[in-house]
Length: 247
Image (cartoon, rainbow, N blue to C red; front, side, top):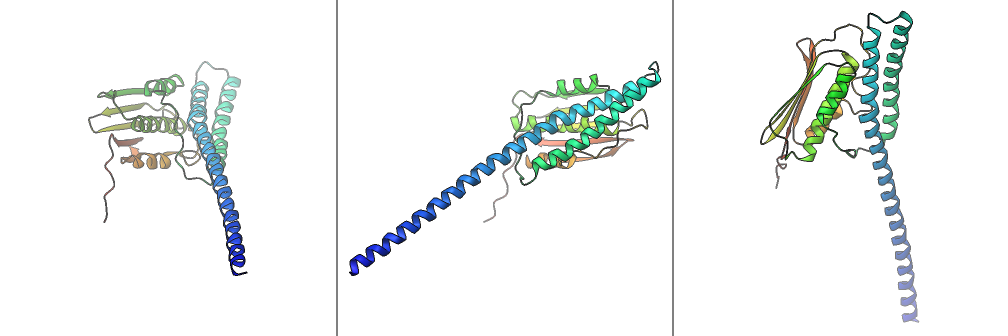
């Protein structure tokens, strides 16, 4: 009887442990599925911000330039003003959608491929923003994380110029050295007081989020008024120093 009782007790313990292990595995699988879902939501939010937010700002900029054309009929000017207002409103609504997609997760977004700074500045120029790109130094062996961060700095800075100072003359100066890449985006005052009033960045991915991105690479980021315009400066090290070790 003693052996039978001991066997039965061990059997019940094994069954209970088995059920507990099965429950743990189920919870772990659910956690993995939730994390995958959140990563996908973050990726979608990042893509929406990078593509739609930038393009909508350029549409608003183009419509604003069209509205000021001297040979445009009055009803066409009103239509251009309406397009500009609708594009600005769409940027605001996009920010709300991105905020929903990005809630519940603090993970870094998945990075799309870098289409190149020349193309980025060319698109802005084509939309009516006078942009000059200057690149000093070689970028052949630039680490991918540095190239992506530099691209995001330029993209977000041009987007903010298009929204808050449309038509302002803008300079993008990128300097590559052996140890770091410096990005300076500076714009002068806009040619007209008529501006598109939107928040400085959308969905938490504006200048504040940009600063966090740069600092995660071990770099520095600052922005603010300069000579009647605005300047964004980022310094991104090619090989960040490891954090100090504390025994």
